[in-house]
Length: 429
Image 1 (cartoon, rainbow, N blue to C red):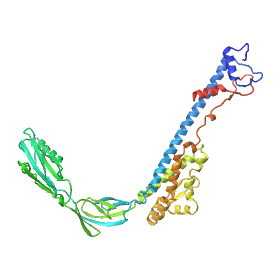
Image 2 (cartoon, helix red, strand yellow; image 1 turned 60 degrees about the vertical axis):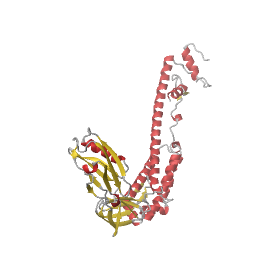
Image 3 (tube, helix red, strand yellow; image 1 turned 180 degrees about the vertical axis):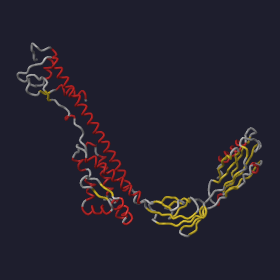
């Protein structure tokens, strides 16, 4: 142990701690008083605190970098699969019409076509409306037990019973009857409707079509006749329409054409031109989204100063799409690679024209097994299957440690290893 007449016990302890482990004290070192030594140690601690703050800030920045990269890779994978999945956007068919009288949807297997429609009659369900009565009044239906039979279409008659009390006002009595009808699986539905202070019962068939009419009859007492529930205000009818000049009928306003590959809903009478085709606007927007997600990853990589070798090569598969003769093919459909920034650009006018004039080429270059979407999906999968540290170097603690400093100052001409600063830093971290 080193001893000296002007060293206090704590000064001697710190001196020996700093020079333990084989570190040799420089010649002619003048030991400082304890208060100066602590002043130096406080400075060391302050430096360690600054280093810790910087390390933590850089760690937070790295987390943000990784999160942004991961989000962009997920987005790129999703937008790529719009083209590479079995239900590729380039295979999808859509229904468009000229007057909104007909709406619908089509499967991918539907044939592109244009149909001329003329709707002469919409399908309808029978509706009966009973007599109006004062909603809050009494006596429109006398107290008693009533049985009613309902026959819808070719089905069997369904019977129901309702008990009207003398304390039920007219609306309550009608509500009881409506609930009894709706509870019975009779093929009709009932609703109490209001007209200012009066109410009436509306009974309507659940299905449209000429064969779906219904009848109501009194079995016991006279509820149907008293409320005039046989009053038919709308008959059940089939839809009548023509497709390319051929007249057809349907029990429903939901119809199918092209061997059930196209489903349509008749909305109103009149003429309409229905087109079954792909939607170039949706395709162009999907391409723009794919490119935007790729450009986001490219931006993250181009502006990173901590890329690994793997990170530098991540986008090679995508960028190789734009070499050789393929470069000209992509340019023909409006897609180009900026050689300076690595960004992909889309000329939407040229892409729209290519979709009209040469859709097969567009599909091959975008959705083919060796096309752009396949390359971006492969890259996104690669980015997500490797830890982020494979592409970006994480902050290293060794870059923030500084063990070299002149702790004894006076009379010292060389740096001593400052183990105290390292200790403080380790504790802070």
